[in-house]
Image (cartoon, rainbow, N blue to C red; front, side, top):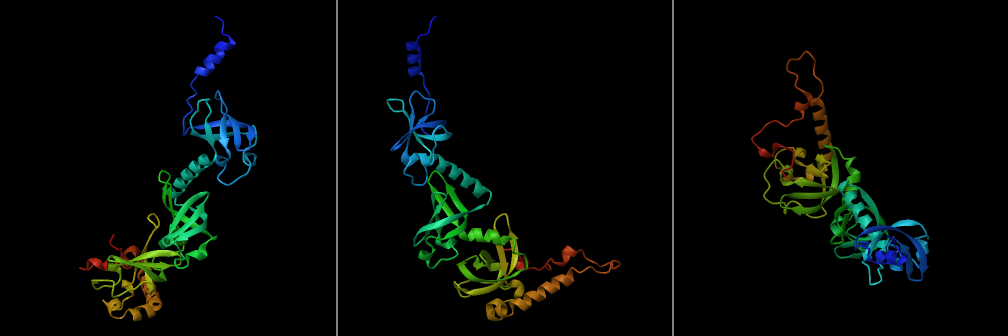
Length: 323
């Protein structure tokens, strides 16, 4: 049975290439036009790449980003018309890949460089590899003069990456905190400023990081309200109680700096003024407690036990902040 050229043409017309919107295909550009390029993707008709879909950046000629006969991946953004032609995009494919990359970076707690290109009362907008991102004011190191940040580059971490809603929320504060985590040690005395006051504790900004001074870690005595003790911007010194690198949390404490229970409530100024000398005494006491005793002493305690607080009926004696 013979198969003529007409039979082949009819078979070709009847063939379903199953090109669908959202599908990624491979092809080669073979002809430039003033408004785009024709691309061979193996269909019965050439596909078309519009100029505005050729790149994330503005270009005047498709040849700037797509050489002829170079095989590339394209995203189908419009299905076949009556002539069987589909519309392609490199720009939207790049955007999809960037969203996927950002999601992976968020999972791995990585940071990126962005450039500030706008601001409003809630924060600043940034260019993040061609995507529009937003940094809330509370997640900026400079929170007062936002206009001065226009055009500046900064390192940020990811808060929310949602390609469906096109929502990209970033944080300069978390990036700075991640960078400083390796330099923060438990027992270290820090100097910072109160950046937030909540019923459960006080947030303190220091050295690009933020720590929580839990209400149970302020004094050995009970505190009914923090409003009368602290105000925003107030300088404060505290000891690093715990560093949780997995959850990116820093717990602070002023309780060990008290000479007597309630001193932080009655004379906080004295505690702050003498914080450095008191912290040094605590370190010296801890060092003495874990110094190896004579090996023939039957009462020698394990070194780890020397650092544990003595048991007491006070549930706040545990230096770990309540969650």
